[in-house]
Image (cartoon, rainbow, N blue to C red; front, top):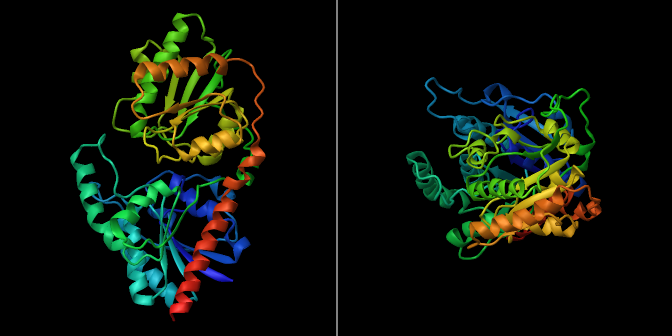
Length: 419
């Protein structure tokens, strides 16, 4: 069995979204002839709250080796764990590559700085490496014109070419996420493939007994829930959403027992969801909890809600990995996504697009509001909801693991031929 060294500085019990990438794919790599060996940082060096339950979701097939990091200073100057752990990850990775038979290296990003390790290790050991784009490194910061964002992108535009230059393969949660990287940095594209986060069906079988729901204690409550980060390019959708609800209330077509829960939206810097609701006199039906919630809590909340909501981005490359969580909750789903997002095809494939509002560039606010009103009128009704979830198999994390294994097999074959 071949061995892939996966370098990712966070691991369970960290509750960050990025942890799901090596976990979901690592859970199934052995099925396709690859032993997953994860190099990560010990949780004592994490800043984020830990989730005691999430370790239940990681397969024992994933071998884990831990290293350390510099602790966050006071005042906090460097928080990024990829930077704080960089020298320790480098030293430990070199040791592993010398002592173990490593066939390939795979580095999901962010943290973006760990991508540099791929090239460093390759030049010292000759082992082929690939970089996996969970998020774009060089990206549009139109909505983030602060000095920190500009500095970050200046650094990114200089470091990314170095990191990817000698990469044998590029992967990402979708091809549009990484294709600009290839266009910017390669005359001849390396091996590359897009593969979604996917889902592990075993996650949704884990029920937490005695878990308190966010809506417990609210009488006659019909909870609708959005779970996850509120995106910088979702603001137009939120404004239109509350305008649509306001129009429905004014026309007598809104169920007053509905409460809207936005859970784990994060400490985003721009206008708050509750402020958009207040613009339309709807603050009494909106509950926002910005703190990140444990992964299994979210899955349990979704499955117990009356309705589930998913707001994507005005950017077409946004894949909305939480799509799978929403669909597997088996609750009716109201969705707003860019019409060209790959998540739209997922929703259509399983026939869960009855309440989908697709966004096209250039759509005006009145048009978006009108489409939302039409969808929300039906969405409130007690109608049969039976999407064809068996069609999701093609998007499972097992399928993504298969795709990654295949691209690494190609890289190994090419490397052996050169030798």
